[in-house]
Length: 404
Ligand code: ATP
Image (tube, rainbow, N blue to C red):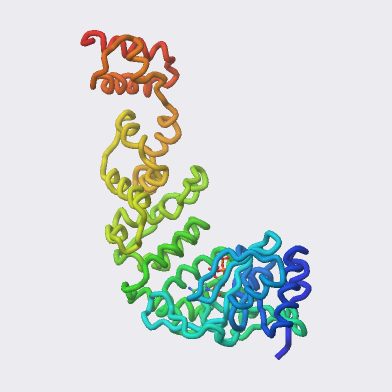
């Protein structure tokens, strides 16, 4: 097998700070008999010369012990430790690094968190527990083989051919969240899902095992749908990936969701997509996805308003004013585009200049008529948005005077 050395990629990809850290780790590893590797998404991104989100180093052996040695020999701050998975997050010279012990895993309960069989297994076993070949690349940080690529799963070929490929035929059965991860990578990297992988995906989606850890599905959905939009969502629907959360058939609406999201920038775009499905499939709202109260409310409010036939400006204003942007966007893409856009573009800008305090100052006694009066002024102001405060006061005086 030809050994491919990535020193040139390494040298241009990392800044001097990271290189100094890797070289320090490499020295300490040699002195203490450890083998270290950059791994996973980082090696993929290094080869593609794309920014990577995390710096992951795998220690062949016990990463926690290694990090403790590092701590005793250099200025290292331990940020968090997960004994069960043998992982430890540290900060060195202001940079955060995740060290993970090599580990082998099995899935005794399909669709749930894997069982860690062994912490400190050999690198090859650690590689083969991973999701896709392009995420199963490693780069040596060890003296003598520094920057050598380790490619047990032929990930480099798939990277060159832009393919997302699972490592074995039971991959999606073990962990269906990988279907959403494949969608994420295919869109992010512009890769295709390899033919056999796509078949495995289709087969799984025809017969989803709903006894799975939905919280993990939720987390992957959130990451994926928040990061990308229309294209991801279209594939989510067209490839029937939604079957992971809904047993109802679903068609994509004929409206540019992406444009709406790009224009109004909701904080949680994934909830807009999820809400669209939830409107037609109540099961999504059951406790299985472990939605927070806030997430549920956003969707429930959209569901409540979905059948309302709002036509008058005042009605639209009163019903929409307290809603989160995500709720309004769910309504827009599920049939009320005209009302929602009219609200967001025009009505929402209308604000009364007067309030109850002004009425007290005018000498009116507090009463429930205040609310009615203010609504009356609002109705007028929606017809004439440029109305001044003095005009608002005149209208409310007229409204309240006969009964004041
Ligand atoms: P991102 O850039 O989105 O963080 P990443 O590839 O770094 O992508 P992570 O979710 O941070 O992905 O996971 C790090 C690595 O752990 C992956 O590259 C993959 O090798 C492995 N991994 C993550 N999730 C799974 C999973 N569900 N099954 C198998 N391996 C996984």
